[in-house]
Length: 457
Image (cartoon, rainbow, N blue to C red; front, side, top):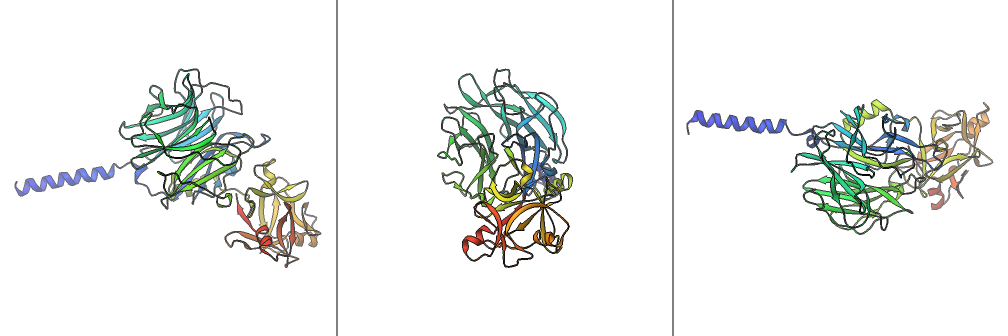
């Protein structure tokens, strides 16, 4: 081969290689270092319900910052005009699509052939809202999710439905989330199932699901992602009185995986989590609620990896909360709240929601300290009176300002958390005792744990 022909061949080969690099989908080229969560909301007495799309972000995948003051970022305007079970998928071009169940409220005996769909460039805005039809059956279309299937060059949209025999997962294949293709059975293990979630990791497709016959969560695997190709890997997992809506998440920074689920009872918007370093095995460890904090009243969530730039853009667009919550260290299912003008720690969830939300303002007696102003009763602060903690209006006196001021220190039981020393009784700290808040001298390990809190959202 002549030198000219050799050079030409090399240039052509190099050009082709560069072209391949240029056309690598953004979905595979980015370095992810954060996470986004989508969810709807429910609270015990329904006062905190919101059947719309909410967003939260996290840097570690465990502690979440709700955006837009935990208010909706998108609301359906057609069908039932409400959503449940949102799902966020990063498409092959790096943009996003959002899918959701077309259902509003807590009435589940309605069959619906449609789901809600939005497009989004970066989740700072949503466009092309539409309802798309998945099938012509007289059944529901719950908890739609999607994943890319390279062998088909299409997206698989899976959802819970009844095929006339039992509750199964159905699938439609699409390239544009408009033309959905014909519905077919995706997963039918011979018993009723609900809430399928697929995580694609390398050449493996992992499906988490709820077995309705025993109420447990399971993880299955397929090497093709094809219908009815999954083999279950785990024995059943459950926390709490009942659990549903599993989410499989791969850590951005380690080889670990998380499995999330939330409480089955509509009145209990409580998340539970497990962790495993071997998703192909049967070794999942339940995480202590001390290690994670989900957004207030969040239900049936979706979690996707994002870049740090995307996380920052979401916070810039929608805003971080202007309030905080205080989580108990040794009773991490409980949060500081006011009730009947007393300070206490109560189990989450609770109503009214705002009873557990606080504005941490500069100390009324010393701006280097902190005072806790109620969100739903502005002008009222946590203060001590006869060592007990009350929620009282600021009467403008020096005594009140001193009683309502605390010095924030490193947590007495865990330095990464926080403790709060009384301003005018500096030998005493804010702590809980029999669930009530008070200020006491701290002299033992029990007291150090009672006096340690996490400032979170």
